[in-house]
Each structure stands twice: as C-alpha cells, then as structure tokens.
Length: 113
Length: 115
Image (cartoon, rainbow over the protein chains, first blue to last red):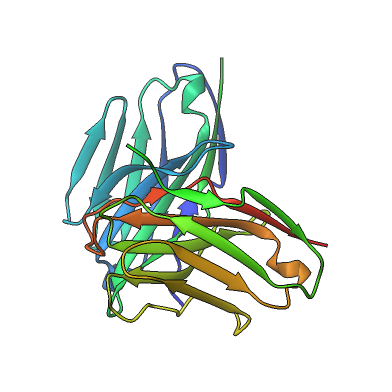
C-alpha cells in the first residue's frame, strides 16, 4: 500500500510567521507530486505540480521544493496571513496504466491575526 | 468559465437505499477522478476515467460502488445498499488529461449522510 505522509498534522502560527511542512513518499514510486490548498467550505485548489528532482516552484508567498531521491517535498509559506489558513494537501501521482492519485492526510494550518 | 459541478450538494439517505451522485467536468477535460473524504480522514481515491480507456477502479471499496462515464462528459457514482460507513464527502475532479503535469480541478462535493 502506498503511503503519502504529511507532517505536522496541524500547525498554529501567528500572522507574519514563516512556516513549512513536509510531505514524504516512497521514492521508488515517484512520478509526480501535487500540492493543493483546501479552505473550509471550498474545493481543493491546485498550488503546484512537480516532476523533476530539485524542482522548485513559487506562487506569491508560497513555494515548494522536491527531492525525489530521498522522497520528500517541502511547502513554505513566508509571512503567513490569516487568509492562508487552510488544509494543505500533498498528492502523489503514479502510473498504473492510468494516473492514480494518492493524497496525504494534509496539514491543517491556522494563522492567528 | 464553468468549473466542475456536482449534484446533489447534500444527500441524506436511509441505510440500505441506493444513491447516485453526479459530476459534470470542465468541458474539454478528458480525465475525471472520484474521491471521498470520511470524517477525520484524508482524501481517498475511488476511481479514475481517462477518455475512452478502461477506468482504474482500484480504489472502489466494495462491489456496492460503481461509476460510469459517457465519453468525456458526465459521470455518475452509484452506491448500492448504502451503509453508515459510506457517509462522507464525495469529490469529483477533472483535468485536461491523465498526464502527470496537469492539475486537477475539483468540484464542490456531495455530502452523503447515511442514517
């Protein structure tokens, strides 16, 4: 069974703090890694898709890195704002004749003003 | 443009009844995914459609679950003889293709409650 592990499970930070969380996966099964942001009462929204070892992606104050050899990805948020409060999901996509996607349980971020 | 839509948004049903959930993907998206999230748990893959290829059904939890998709359009997820453990939010997502570089666009979900 393929496991995508995310840590921490939840995180409470103050407005202005920078923070990061981890997604780890079996490196031998890597094909592509996605990060999604899921706000309460909304649909998950794609942040990044990464495929190559060493990939770094950035969108505003949010960035992500990928290490396929050791099987982990980091998501960074610089200067957290209350509107960043959400669950951040990591998903591993691999080929089984199609492109099955396995999600981690997510990191729930709370940013206090 | 229009996003992924799902109906109904909420469904309450009695144990043992059949339910049908609908997903309208974004026009032009060839890949369609069904997931569910049970209370306190992460997103669980159920089934994946890619164009006219045979679907990947490896995530369906039991033979009470089935899904269909006609071409590259609407998909329906059917749960027969519902059980209380089927209570969850069922999410549908679509993407341009099954290709690994394409992000998935999610619908608002259907909240299913089995009493």
